[in-house]
Image (cartoon, rainbow, N blue to C red):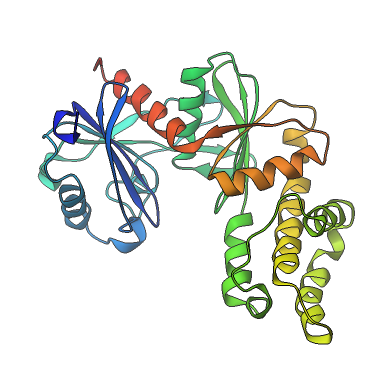
Length: 300
């Protein structure tokens, strides 16, 4: 089969990227991607044009989308559900004057105390619960803004966001530390990662001073970019785990995220005596969008 045989389209439309899947029921027929995320588009017509472009040749079927496409700066602002709430998001339809296809966008989730929001991650959580309805524990969704969500009785009970990925990107690309990192990637089994993680968890008040030492070490002696990036990752993930300790301590933890990043969080949690499970992010997203599509009354 090809995308031409689809009976609906799944879309994950974030700030930086758009991913679409031609679907026939629960079966994925074809996948496409674009770097035209919400941040690259400004008017409703831009969103409609990009969707038409990336789905060219696919049938005129309903699109179920999640992510920042439903934010205030997105195509259509979709309201948040308040915790505690079911993971399967409510859908808001894009006015039919704004594109050729029928598009429904999943709503995000918010909590008021303490204030927090998510868009897109709730759909991945819905995908997890579609496969494991009795899951009771914490889902960690590492990324630009890492989420720690407590799940019980099929609902998102509460959650916490930590800006770990964004801070790493800012430090690695725009701070003085960029001169010491090179193109190295973090080895989750490295001694440098484990040492920095442990220090950040036990002495978080020293974290900012230790960050500059990463640069200084390369100036007073020959630096090792691989060890430096491992220490930066370990420090930031250690601060992340420390901030979210109340969420994961003593809980069953499932990690849903990009493979390389998920492995870092897996290694970090294992060092704290937790035995997390890793799930596939794309599979969870499609499963969550499928659950939302079925909620409209459609059937595979």
